[in-house]
Image 1 (cartoon, one colour):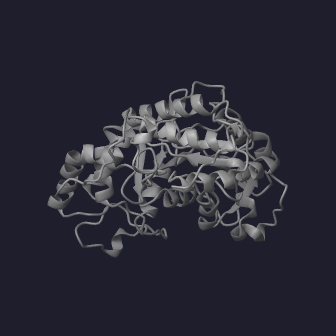
Image 2 (image 1 turned 180 degrees about the vertical axis):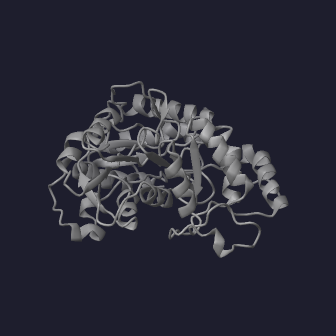
Image 3 (image 1 turned 90 degrees about the vertical axis):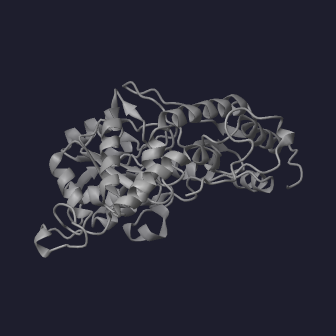
Length: 409
């Protein structure tokens, strides 16, 4: 296998003057870092090829063991996506048809569709306007006699208020399931995200802090029964692993499962990238600090992200850098014209999505979530991003709000 090429000349660390940039600033790129770790990736991938087991094999087992060690989880169960991990975790904790799961109205759509796919019913609640995570008071107001679980989302760079939400779940005898898809490396008083309730998930979508080259995910739990059920559900209800090509009916557990096995090629890539995860997290923190310093006092930038004080020792992990701005859509268009990539998290709140229209929610019910959808935008943030590229992004934002948008590239 040959090493990948095409790493940007300005990626990583400090760069030259902004005027020397010969390309735009993509929202995400991993060309330079992937080229650096290619020998390790190739070694792991060749190991998979030599064994000839490309799904649900030994490399997945190695990754499960490595991430159990990294997170402190008793059990880590590889899945083919973060979405499937959420669906099967909800089934594994015993969610029954029609039971409600309280979720925030501001999150990726999979937070809520996972509940529907697990045959439950999402019940929406508002967010805290500063942390963007599930507001405990609004979550409490959403509870009914059909509520079975609460699902906080650890969004963007910090964990939800797990003290207040944990107290709510305990007081009302509810299951706590964490959508910790973005939260690898985040901890609450030393406990990794996903392990403060019955279980949580990780997503390894390519842009994530630990990203594969395609879809992959994982369930984290300390509960052996939940771990066993999740493992059975990911493999068509089979107990144990398929031996070569033979899959006798005697392997069936009596549970209707699905095909959510992780590919060993993705596990191989993740094993290689795991060795630099802490370094990548540190680099993301440097970039977030650089953005904050440059944007905090820019007119038109309403809010740069801060770390909300919690009733525990917590650590931010900067998956994305989200700011609130005036004239958000105009700014996005302006930045695109200068070759600067952005993402809008999220253009519409979940309770107003057409797929949930039958639940009967109305505009105005969750004002913090609805406001965030009109003002938030994510700026480029990834380890390959150069300091000079942060300057380019911030200069373009400053020029836009100063009335000097310039000409499109």
